[in-house]
Image 1: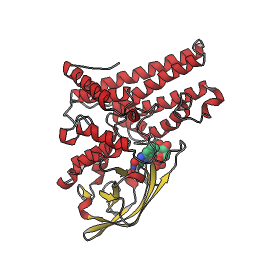
Image 2: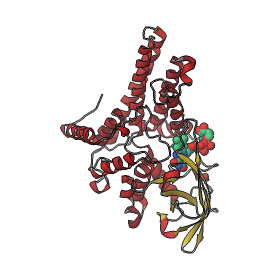
Image 3: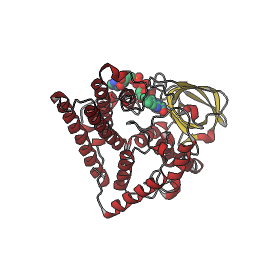
Image 4: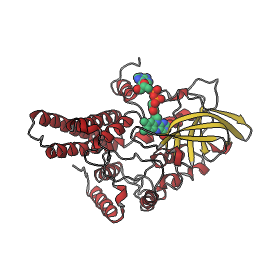
Length: 388
Ligand SMILES: Cc1cc2nc3c(=O)[nH]c(=O)nc-3n(C[C@H](O)[C@H](O)[C@H](O)COP(=O)(O)OP(=O)(O)OC[C@H]3O[C@@H](n4cnc5c(N)ncnc54)[C@H](O)[C@@H]3O)c2cc1C
């Protein structure tokens, strides 16, 4: 299903399809269910494709043309995200720059920093986001990496972890503690750190899928010019909230379309394995179909509120629900294959996609806020329950 609400949106969709038909390289349509998860390294096709999207106003359509967009409306943005997800098109293999850092620089940076946003969105500069630390993940405000005033510079010392794309990034949008005596939400600032500065050690972390796109990043007396402070000193918490909102907006579309594709893959698997007549299998697939379509309807409801200028509390629930549903879909794909299901070597094959999808979907229920934290958000901000 594709929601198109007006002739303008239909023209927009047709133009997008024509552009993709003419320009999208085959590598940007990987044959797997979970997008945006790449090995370290940015292939040349990905650099060129991101630049082509930007130059043609298709990188972030809601932005102005100078920022890689075409001033698209909220409903057109949705049409765009849904079509990309439906065709399995990957815009970029490093989302930090266009989805988090670029918008944050535009919102909070000075003129010089705002001028760095187009390069972040086009992918000319590769960014990573340094928030999490060994003792500060869900409780991000507990971060300890220190930035000490040293005249024209800050001296940064500490450690980040799970820093996506750090092994290939040029710069880090780094959250540091600049006032250790202030209450924990009030002593945080954001610095732009060049990753080739002396004193930085980046150690890739290999995941269970074999990928190593994120890393530990160690800072040992790293000198960062004061001009690299984003926003006001000790006002980093406000930027944190802005950055996370940029990261989360629109993710539900990919979540729902990915779940739909996984369900279609399960139906193919069942037919291939001759299980289509089994009543238990049919009942389970029917239940999964009902959940995918309910989530889609909830997403559309939220989109309709959002397009009319209201907030969309439904979307707080979507990341939680879609990431957990995709885990269940992948696990069922493994179950249907018996013991063989968890032992297929070729991850991209029709059989191997299920265990790989399962592990990747676990990451999706942690990154950007764990399922437990999302449940807390739903409890307090959607249901209005008191904080425990
Ligand atoms: C694929 C991926 C990419 C990532 N990329 C980045 C990145 O680029 N930059 C970056 O800075 N970070 C990144 N992260 C880190 C991510 O933001 C953290 O893993 C996440 O915030 C959770 O923090 P944690 O791992 O420290 O777990 P913890 O916060 O230590 O949580 C451990 C467990 O306790 C639970 N828990 C914690 N607090 C509560 C609570 N109040 N109520 C109920 N349960 C709770 C959690 O849900 C979890 O199950 C990435 C993570 C993943 C998986």
